[in-house]
Image 1 (tube, rainbow, N blue to C red):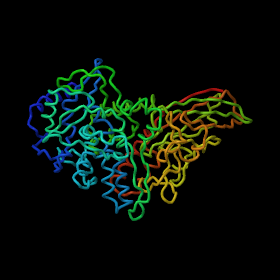
Image 2: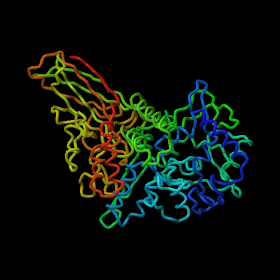
Image 3: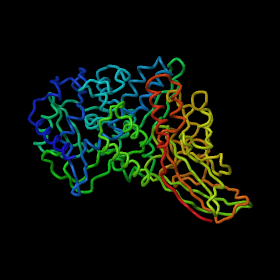
Image 4: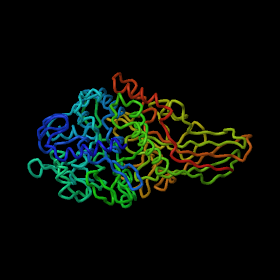
Length: 549
């Protein structure tokens, strides 16, 4: 770490007095990092121009809070390297060949935004597949590989944030205010000296205070995603609310309690410098870790770093995975065992699950699922009932959807058989009412019983974030949590009976990964290969409870 810190300081000082050029070779003011000609209003710089001065940051206790090092191990930085995204874009393009270019344009706006936003404002299409695999890029050609890079988020204007005008990544990018001077927003006031240094080192940016950088609507722009459902000839047959965490948050108590940034970019609880170059301590700096829930993708970026062109160092990816696991195990959910009663031939147990987050659990991309694993043992430890066991291949025992892609488990109020399992998940439907994992085939949901955040009134929720299926009428499924009753026949077993209840979670469910297998293209095949190599690491326990009766 000391060596990297030193390089960052030296580079930052060198850039402070350098002419306005990009690293590697001189560029005009209307070139982006790939060398593409773009209008003055859509100039992006890649992360190496930023991290030089925004690394080498520590707290008084020695914690490394370097913005660049933490960011580059995040899912945000690796959005274009994401093999599941790459495989899914290829799948959709094979399913809908007549819409291939439109698919690349829309799917790149949040995963390759520096490229797509420049192309959008220049009236060009964006090529995703010509840039894959990313490790074949020539040095210096970084705009696509840099994912959600610094100069994208920090150039977003406040115009329209939090409204449908900016959803699906349709943000307004800052324009030049004078010649080549373009604002890059941050949450703090900036002195004249640092403005001069940043403009000199980046060749174009002048830092400005923008309170909207702390606005949840900034995150909501990409994290409110509608997709167009396509017919057999590319015609639009509907609109599908694919990812709605921002709207779910707005419909919860968290709207007035905690923003996206406060949860996913934890604040540093002391004054710290935000730049290693003459930085003054400031209150309220947020760590750029973007902690979330996709530990499977983090593991793939680590295990296949050469193929995926992962730039974060192994120890940085390890730290990111540890943060994710700690976050999931401490801040995601709570499980309690409630009433336990005797029945004519056994016991009845109530298991209650609470969502501790500010949107549905799980949320965002619909490959995610959580489920209850409940085990009842007799006095000797022998299992007499088990529902929701995780199989070695990543499937869930008893789950109809893992066994048959056209079926799925309903929402249960009461479970009486080991073949029944309570899974909190979205199940998509196509225009014929069939189960699908094809996003551009999806017109709505057959089931959505993802666990609600506090304050989420399912009766008044709009159709885009509605509870769908049996959970909609379940009085034990509310913003206070979900209660499921397990009725277990103990037969001739003797008590006391030991009851274990766990809430498991998978970022990529078995069916969502394996439905890529029939697509004979490089990206889907690699994703299935990566998934099968990591099946033992595909799920994690979010919360658990134990009781004896």
